[in-house]
Amino acid sequence: MGIDILVPVLSRPQNVPLFMEAVANTQEPYRVVFICSPGDKEQIKACQNASDTLIVDWKPGRGDYAKKINYGFTQTENEWVFQGADDIRFSPLWDHHALMLARKRGKQVIGTNDLHNPAVKRRLQSTHTLFSRNYITQQGGTLDSTGIVFCELYDHQYIDTEFVEVARRRKVWAFSRESIVEHFHPHWGLAPFDDTYTKAYRDTPADYALYMSRMGLATRNGRSERYRERQEARRAALLERGTRR
Image: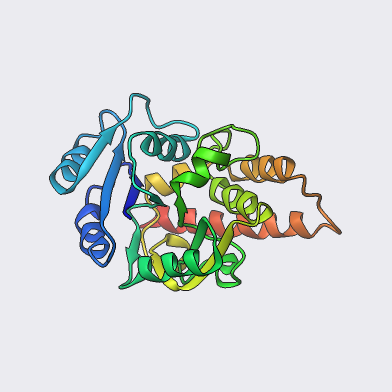
């Protein structure tokens, strides 16, 4: 058994050493695969000095993260795959707890605990997820083959939300509270709001609308719309704070 840890990256070479230090907490045999954009020279250099590195042949436009995960999946072969990022920190035994739960409950998609996201804290979602390769090869991670693992129609947001929702509907998903992979994200005051984060949130309303449409979810009594407005207000405040720095 082994784990391919796929890590799409963009313009944050300073995060590579911190990531590599934390990923050493993995108990199972693992392979870190950084997935870089062409021309991102400092990032590519930092990744190549640290671990296996793939360089895609497209520029970082719409759907970049999803496309990088999908491409990384095709270039790896371990039994399990983890959808990572350079702003996460693995706690000791994170993989042990996730894999034990997978075996105990016979599940193929295991959500990890990022400690901060409200939906994750309610055990309804996972921002970074461990999944079996067989699950993807047999069923795919999306509803309609709009991507191997992740749907490539979104700009950036809601790809992980759809992935988990699809797995939940197929009854192959479980959440591991003990599998802690903390997300050092600006939303939680744990990282500066840089250009890469700004890119990720540039089209959130459209991504949200696409998710609701694809999942067949209707707004009831305005709740979903109010939630979206609150999220947008929070992101706008973070963007303004980042601009002032």
